[in-house]
Each structure stands twice: as structure tokens, then as C-alpha cells.
Amino acid sequence: MQPIHDALVYIVDDDASVREALAWLLRSRRLASESFESGDAFLARLQAGFDPTQPCCLLLDVRMPGTSGLALFDGLLARRLVEVMPVIFLTGHADVPTAVDMVKRGAFDFCEKPFSDNALVDRIEQALARSREVQARRRAQDEVQARLSELTQRERDVMELVARGLPNKLIA
Image (cartoon, rainbow, N blue to C red; front, side, top):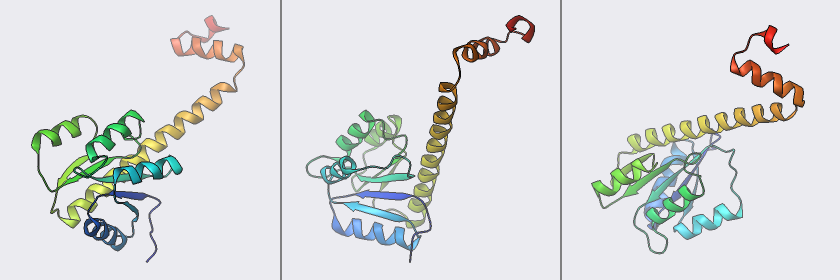
């Protein structure tokens, strides 16, 4: 069964059975995914090539050997990737203060294992919708910047006066 969505769900969890179960769940909903056994493996994937125009989200285990999910999240925040790649934390060890902190810092959600398949897929779809919205907004901003760069100095001067609200007769 081929994925029908233009999006990609990254799965980072040190437990192979969890990765396989999540990948199967996503395939059953026709969502493409890539799985990684560690935060370091995922970081290597990002460094090898990340398409910032493809809608995506990240399912991230909190506790892993090496680079923990929390440390990986901090790195993604520093690289300003969390906005285009919403993060859904998965944990088998519910910790309310950590969950609240991560959501306040920009995590999309924090789900406790075991989770409801339908509820998790709903949150993934919502995270992917946010990723699409952010990318559409960035494309629109890039288009505006490209158009602005094509203006002559005189056209920019006139535009600035119009933006200030001056009437045409004062601008001319």
C-alpha cells in the first residue's frame, strides 16, 4: 500500500518493537515514515539531507541511551526546526512537570505509552497540518521578499509612503 500523503513522520525510539508497531500503524493509515533507533541516528539523517519543504512531524521517545529525546528536542529548538517539524513526545514514564515544560517550550504534544492508535494518528494528522501551514506561510513570505527585491529604489520609497498611510496626492 503506497502512502497517499505528501508528508513524512519520523519515529525516534530505542525500542525496535515500538518503532515497528508505529511504522505499521502509519502504513495502515497510508502515512510514510522513517524510523531511527537513537537521537544520534536521527541527527545524522538530518545532517545528510533534510527537505524543509516536505511536511513532517517527529514521534520522539523521551528516554533513550545516548542523546535523549529531551536533548534532541533542545537541539531541534536551537536549529529552529520545531516549527516546521512538530514534535510529539512518547513516553512510558509519565512525568507531568516534564510534559508541561516541553509543551510550553514548543512540543506539539506529549503522549503516554500505551497510547490509543486513533488518538495518536489524530494528533499526527494535526501536527502534519501545522507543518503544512507553517511551510505555506514561509513560501508566501519568500514570495513577498522576492517581489520586494525586484522593486526599484523609487518604487520602494513610494511603497513605504503608501504603507505609512499617506494619500496619493502627497506621495506624488
